[in-house]
Length: 443
Ligand code: NDP
Ligand code: 2IT
Picture 1 (cartoon, helix red, strand yellow):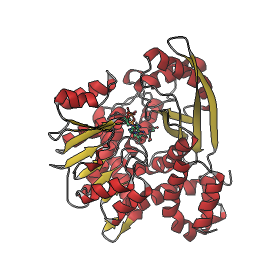
Picture 2 (cartoon, rainbow, N blue to C red):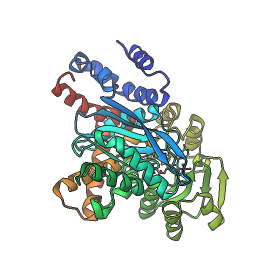
Picture 3 (cartoon, rainbow, N blue to C red):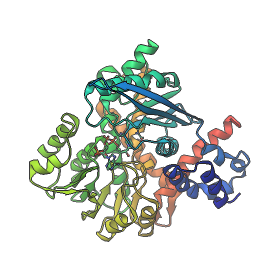
Picture 4 (spheres, rainbow, N blue to C red):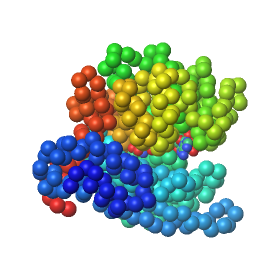
């Protein structure tokens, strides 16, 4: 079977799952030469096995609204690969959630988790429930109903979820509480927990910090730093907020934030009191970025994405396929030379091609945003030891892990003086998982 025949088969088996097929194609294209060159992988049919989730659960989630109406949502957990550790990956609550999106996220997670150097397998889950505009009571009842089914598939050595879009510390608290009650045991079955009941310092910051650390390492290959760089960030949630904080720490200037309604351009930079305002707006008042523009009298671009803004560095931190082919060209044309993906698969395939052809520094999500799940694994370690590390200790470990991910990308992706981080991340992530699958026999 050649690459085309392989992809044909995957497409036939997963029709109507465009996001999943997109993520598979991107990975398989990079690793095909390695696959061909290693008969032991072919003989064990590793690729056909790796694109098939070990298990998928889908279930009904009924819940009662404040006004007494009964609603039903669909819940999912994709347990994709446990070759190198328990299934690990976030839960996403967003109306767009479907099996295709969760399979793409679970598939990416396998290779991302492998890159972290820590023993975690790949999984993802969530629901098409929309927490926006719901009361705390409604969110709690939804989370409890969701856990009434999901609990039976989880365990600290089996499957350990965390947050993603629409799932933050509030939701994790409600889900963990329900799990603890049903099982009558207090274990580290979730990560992203609050500090006073088993969470790790720096987990909230980790994805955003890690994305900036990865960019810092990419910039260093060209003798550059964040000092005085203009940075465009998309999104305004967990990942964006801490990416902005870290860019500010390193002397850069972040000039945009966004949500699904549009983007804000603040040419003076989102820092100091303005960053504090954003944190309160999003995490306490649960408001929209438009309110930031009104508060600070800066421009709000309704219905638009930030990529038209001139910048040196771009950090997409919202969602998949948020940079289309034309936007990738616009970024490059306007002088952007470094893209580090805080979100999962935010760039469409033709956009990725544009970045690679123009030889910009391009860090794909599975490498650049791995700091979040890496710190989740550090949270699991602390829970196992029943101890907690200091802030500096965790931050230092994340810094080292991001450096190691960068080195793995260079090892497998260097092509003369250009580093193809897509190829590097895919091959490095794949090798460890494939070797483990070989060791375990045909399962
Ligand atoms: P949050 O829910 O905290 O924030 C999500 C942000 O993205 C919001 O600003 C939201 O705007 C915006 N957004 C979501 N969907 C869309 C859409 N369809 N179109 C435009 N904007 C959208 O999520 P996170 O910050 O945790 O996650 C952001 C990205 O980072 C995701 O791709 C996630 O998979 C990835 N990621 C997260 C990690 C984590 O630890 N949290 C780890 C690694 C990756 P709005 O409010 O309008 O929906
Ligand atoms: O996409 C991701 O890596 C996450 N949402 C975090 C997963 C985790 O288990 O911390």
